Image (cartoon, rainbow, N blue to C red):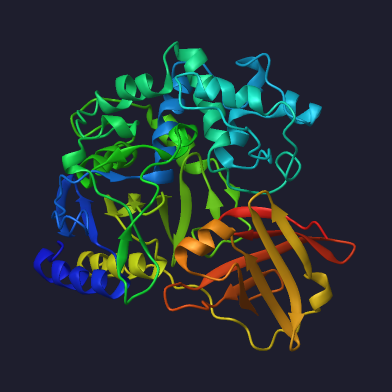
Length: 458
């Protein structure tokens, strides 16, 4: 079975208009063959058309690339996933002495290290990851080491990058090119925004209202601190070249072995549970999210920057990978609709829907009420009309730019005693799920949403 490109192109054009997303580039790798197409415009102000050669920001999909490079060094015996970080960075220190001594690369890849992202401003120079490691000497713990999953947007992978730099003797940007991009024959994949051909780069867009339509993002790239966790740019064809390595047991499409079969198995089978299993997947592996699609194990690499988004799904049992790069969103419902169209053509089922609430559940609101927060993020859970509601406190600058209130309230509809559906309050939003869990003395300790964890402060 193959993808009906003409039908799918027409459907995606309609969905882009419905969701206010300027363009999408889509690629399918099936049995070693690639099908790709692009629709829409790379920039709404210039009207430049998107093509399959358009370069998009991959956001946190970058973490899959960095994990792949780290596993190469594990193959070579230069690093060990379960040795303390201090083995490779002797001066490594955070606020908790026990964590300083015990945290390992596996904790960083799992996102269960619990270290707050308090690294200060490390600048944009070549020593950025060295400076980030030095900047967390007093960083507190969000949760105890290994206690739960809590996504690290930048810090965990910056520490991994610094280990790579020390073990390999090259800067992260250089070793990614030498170890991955060049051996794979990739000419359009880069780790620095200034390396991208501006004439081929997609421009990010945000959506404030349907009437206004998408507008160019005011922040066109992430700081260099996000590099190993979020700054790779690529095309759909070259994202699929990386996916082929994972489908091929470590061997690239050009026949180059980049990782041992054992290394690929380690990336995929070494896992920790995710407190909210519904939004992305129930487990986290090494640089990959593990999804359960109606009993089929699917691996994901997702990413977002400020105005661009990337989705990758790898289905090993079907020898298939699907990727989509966009310069608007993110909208999970858009991704689900597009991927379901592709999956239908391939006879591979559907992406699971979010769970429905259980109207029979009667919960004690006092177990969940409180303020859950970290720097830059605050969630207030309170009782209302016999149920629970969640108030999200929005950054004032972001609220002004997006023309939104700085406090947005959502009803929390229980799915179980620890999981809730959060229905959108705005037609530009999608439903989300929230986990409120880990009860001590009858009260929850953590709120987990969008893979991030927030401890209860009051």
